[in-house]
Image (cartoon, rainbow, N blue to C red; front, top):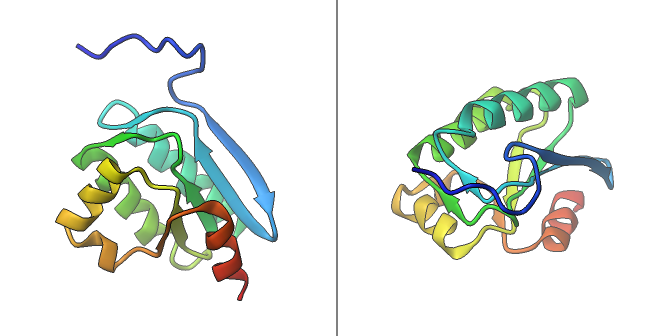
Length: 123
C-alpha cells in the first residue's frame, strides 16, 4: 500500500513555467510510478505540443521512479521530437541509476542542475 501524501500537495501536480524561451515542467510529487505515470505522460505531451518548444523536465522533487515512470518519460521523448524535444535535469541519484542501468542515459540529455541545463540548451 502506498503511504499517504503528507506534504499537503496534490499527488499529481506540476509547476509549469516559461524560462529563457524554454518550457519547464517540474512535477510536484516524489514518486514517478504506475500511479502517476499516465497523467505525467499526458501532461508533458500535451504541453510540449501546445508550446511547440523544448521542454525541460526538472525532476528535483522526484526521488523514486519505476519502470512505468521510465516508460512515461520515454513516451514523452518520442512524442515530442517534432515539437522541440525533452531534456532532463536535477535527477536524484536513485532515479539516475534507473537511466544508467537501462542505458537510457545514452539517449537522454541529462544535466545535474537547472541552470546548467538552461545554459547548455541556450548555447
